[in-house]
View (cartoon, each protein chain N blue to C red):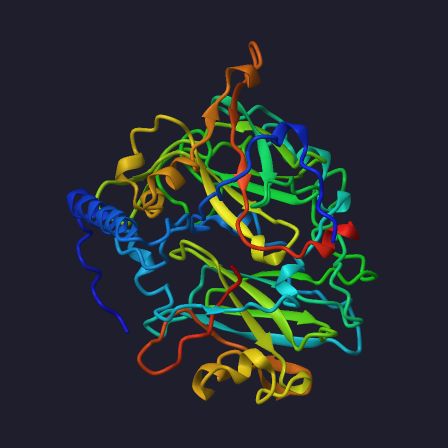
Length: 203
Length: 260
């Protein structure tokens, strides 16, 4: 393990204090989402899977102004990622899409008017889950969760899943709908009927 | 399910709730709780949090092999040279006070975050977003969209040229106005370091009235959301300079840095 040397400008700041989070608000829609943000898998890739679902609030209503980000290893298990998720035309700044050659591992999708999202990707290698970061108006600090793909894991032995009671565990497991299509809903708050999604902390 | 929306609460009601949350936080810290940088997701003065915060505590993931300890990367193909100058995106000059906003992105150990994506968005000088859902009667500026991005350099530095955004009204409560701010989205070397936040301008009289800013109940932490006016960054006859450093919380795998 090597640690990077501190740059001279930063000498003397031994205890950097973190910058607080603030909500993404309602108006990120023209800044952060980008065309093809959910198309992580190369176009036409035969191994592509789709994960889709809705984001709900504590009244059981779909959230139309949430944004989800996805991060995962490549099918080969690489966690290095690759640039080019937001590849742009150099002359007019328009999004021109991924090259389809590198697997960037990163996806970003805003929910639609019905709270729905979809991401098309390749199954991760070396880990049975896709990481998700949730942003929304009304959410002051983003939330992390994971989409566990049932075909890649045994919920009874996977340490995080096995540590949860069955009802809670189920919120992290994608439900196969048909070949290559998985359903994964996210519930920010228990609505009186449905279990609240399990969110994760890494500190 | 349709219900008649209740009359919006008065500023006095929101301000009393803000004061109450500050007092509760101060008491908790006095009682031995650790100071908290980030807002509590359950923060009733910001009404939209009520149905959008989890009621269960998050599950700690101590796994040193967690995928989240690595993160997405971006590069020269993801930004263009024009993206960091928000005043040069249209044929004419935007209206407003031209400003330069610069600072460094550092991780929680004080190390620069290099070559990572910084994204910003903001209202125009009149306090209007170029977003269809912002319909408040302030003029749009055909020469200003208010979206920018850049990559941090080897010192973790970012820089934008833009115009100072205006304050704008919102519907959280009666006579609610957001202090002028620029939205920032930041990546570290790990997905755990992800941060979306807002930068404010020093001396804004609206701070005390705004439940979003006041949701950071720690006074010192809240002050870290405010940029410093830096006269040395101002350019004669051209722009005013603001400096704002950003420190990302969250762990990162040190091994990942060796390969970058």
